Each structure stands twice: as structure tokens, then as C-alpha cells.
Amino acid sequence: MIARISYAFRETWASFKRNVTLTMAAVITSAVSLLLVGSTFLIQRAFDNLLTRWKGDVELIVYVRSDADANQIQVIEDALKSQPAIIDVSKLRYLDQADSYAEAQKLFAGDPGTLRLLTPENIPSQFKVVPISQDSNLIRELGEQFRGLAGVREVAYAQDVFDVVARVSQFIRIATTAMSIVLLMVAVGLIWNTIRTAMFARRREIEVMKLVGATNWFIRIPFMLEGLLQGLIGGVLSCLGLWGLNSAWSSAVADFNDTELAALVVTDGYMRFVMFILLGIGAIAGAVGSGIAASRFLDV
Amino acid sequence: MIRLENVTKTYGTDIPAVRDASFEIAKGEFVFMVGPSGSGKSTLLRLMNRQEQPERGAVWVAGKNINEMADSKVPYLRRNIGNIFQDYKLLLNKTVFENVAFALEVIGRPKHVIRQQVPAVLDLVGLSDKEDRFPHQLSGGEQQRVSIARAFVNRPLILLADEPTGNLDPATGEGIMRLLDRINNTGTTVVMATHDQRIVNMMRRRVVQLDRGVIVRDQERGVYD
Image: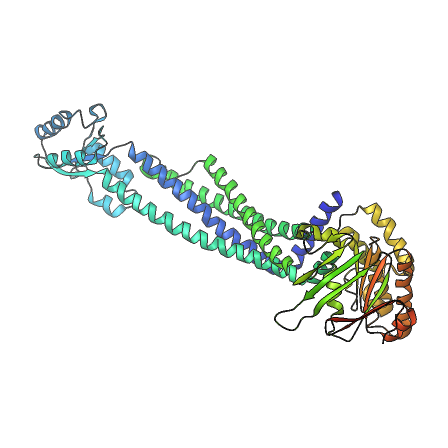
């Protein structure tokens, strides 16, 4: 048994050294494709975090004209409070112009052009409304009623923003998934080809092995180990890359601590989970690709 | 030890390489398969260790129908059958010792067995002093002795030799023949395909003659023609 194991590792290592160029190509391709797979996971998770946070948060904002007087504002507030069946009155928040301006400073921190146009005087104050009802039609109907009130400048539905972000996230999900599947297939193909080349270079040896009665598994295992190793190294490289990308992103987003953008990060726990998945996919893809290549060669 | 029952083997759609061949080889026998190139000698040998499957008929080896054997059992069949070829099929990057040891290594024999059996078999074929040489440092006859050592190191029941003297001069070929004879005397069944008339006539053993895939003669203590 020990003789067999040491044989397998010796052969794997020798073959690895013999085929440096092809091995590098296979490793790099699997690293890149796995990096993309990992990014898909992380982007998805970040969007999900963002969307979940929004879901449970403000769904309706009633913007009040900057020239509205206290009386008009009171009318709006009373109207809102008269609908306890639809909105959560206890969570109703009024941001006056100073508060709204402070919030805008954060929201548009990356957009100085917009920021320059806003002043504490011209900015609308706002009611942030958290609905109780899950029925978005009902909420919309209510919103339309408020639109007719004097002093109301605009009614914004978080649902609309939510839908846009959800659509964008859906698109990114499909695009990155498709790309990573294609790249993953390329990586498996390259590993397959490396193993086939390695086996072709050693066809004499394999012929002799078969004739003296080596089992197919005995012949196959060093080649499968080689493929597995290529996939695994690709996986390790992609994990390093992903970790680097994620920490760069997290520290960039950390500046927006109080805004929704801050939700666009993933936790270390999830990151570890993704890395684990990447190593797994790399190892399995490598072993399967090389196993298929080896089997086809052994059947001839 | 080996029995063929009405075996027919066709490559592609051409005329059969072997047609309706039936014969039996007893344990410890020495048999020459003779006939011109393309008469089906090699195909018969390849049918005996399941490198080929026949279209019709059955091949029995050591009491088993090897055509019905599961693929996963074939390696174990082959551990009982040694193979020798005209072109030796040695691994050029391995020494004499390593070439022979390889046959034991790949069937999972432990190191101490290898260290004991390889020198013994190299002694038998007369290459004890050359175990660290590489194949290209050896003469043709010596290379063939290495390949015989590799085929015999696992003490197989059967030795299949396909034109083992084909690449050698007559004197060297005779030496190889004597070595195979000695191996046969240990009780190993030897089947040898050849068109070397001189050797066949010298040995006076059983001769099975093939012509275009058909067995035309099967004679005890025969000569080539």
C-alpha cells in the first residue's frame, strides 16, 4: 500500500515537472475562472444584503416642498398618521431640512455635482414612511393620495429603486454566472488536454503497464492526482485574488459607513465559505477532467 | 492451459485475420505459431491475453473463458501471462534493473520482494553484471533478455513471444531460443510466433501453421515446412 502511494506521488510530481508550460496554462485558466465564480458569489451576496436591508426599511418617502409652511407639514403628518392600518406610525420619521441636507451629504458624497446644487434652504424635507401592509398596490394608492396634498413635492417609492437594483443584480448574476461557467469549461478542457498530452508522452510506459497487469486505476490515479493538483492550485490562487479584491472593496466601502452602500460587503464567514467552495470546485473539476482524459486513453 | 474454440477475428470489414481457429495447448507445452507475415500469428497471441476480442468463438485460459471476463479482471489475467515482443518494448529512461522492477512495481509488489526477485531473474537471463545499464547501452540480444526477464519476473503460467528473434542475428537468436527453452523447462507454457525456419527446425517442437488466418497444420515435433 505504501509502495503504491509513494509511486503515485512520485509519478504525479515527475509529470508535473515535465509539462511546465501546459500545466501553467491549465492552472492560470482555472484560477481566473474560479476567481470569476467567487466574484459572482460575493457580488450576489452583497446585493442580497443590500436588498434585504431595504426590504425591511423605508418603502415610501414623502418629500415636502422647501417652501411649505408648518401648517402644511402638519396636515401631511396628520394624514399619514390617519392610516395606521397601512403604515407603521411608530416608525414614521420626519427629517427637516437640516437633517435632509446632512443625509444628502452622505448619499451624494461621490457626486459633488449634485451636492453643489443642494443647499439647506432648497432641499426638500421628508417623511420616511415604513408601511405595515405588504400590498404594494395599496401603498401606491396611498402615495397617490398624498401627491394631491398641498406642500407635497414628490412621493418616492422605495419599491421602484428596489426593483431597479434587483434587476441590475439579476443581470449581473446571469452575466457573471454565464462567464464563469464558460471559463470553467475552458479550464476543465485545458486540464483534460494537459493530462492527455502527459499520457501520450508516456504511452509506451502505459502499454507496458497494461501488459504486465497493472489495473486501470493504478495507471489513472497519478494522472488524476495531477489534474486535481492543477485545479487545487488554481483554486488557491483564485482565493488569494478574491481575498485581495474583497478587502480592497470593503475598505473602499467603509467610507460610506452610514449609507446603504455599506451593506454592499460580505462578512468574513461568508468569504471563508466561498473560498472553501472554490477549492472544492477546483479540485473536483481537475480530478474529473483528468479522470475522463485518462479513461479515454486507457480504453484505446 | 489455453483452448481456442472456433475463434474468428476480423479487423474492420476486411477478410478475417483469424478464421474458425480451434486448438488446445497443454500446461508446460512449447508451441510454435508459424506462417508468413499477415497470416494471423500475432492476432492469435493477442487473443490469448485479451488484447483483442474475437467476433465468434471462445478463448479459454487457465480454465476461464476470458472473453466473458469483466474488464476489471483482465489485469489479474495478465499477471499470469508474460509478453515478449520483436521490438522489446523496454522503457528507455529506465535501467535494466528498473525495467524489470517496473513490472513488479505496477502490480503493487512491495520493495523487499522486488529487491529479491529482480536480481534472481537477471541472473537467470545472464545479465547480473548489467543491471545499471540503460537499454541503449545494450546489444539487441541483451535487450531481448531484459524483456524476457521482465516477462518472467512475476513467474507467469504462460509466456507469449511474438517474433522474439525477429530483430536478432542467427547466433543471438539461438541464444534467446535456448533461454526460452530453459524457461519452458521450469513448467511455463510458451507460445511463440515466428517465421524463423532455422529455429523451428532446430527445436523440433509442436508447430501450428497458419495461412491467411486459417490453421492448415498442427503437428507434434514438427518442422517449419
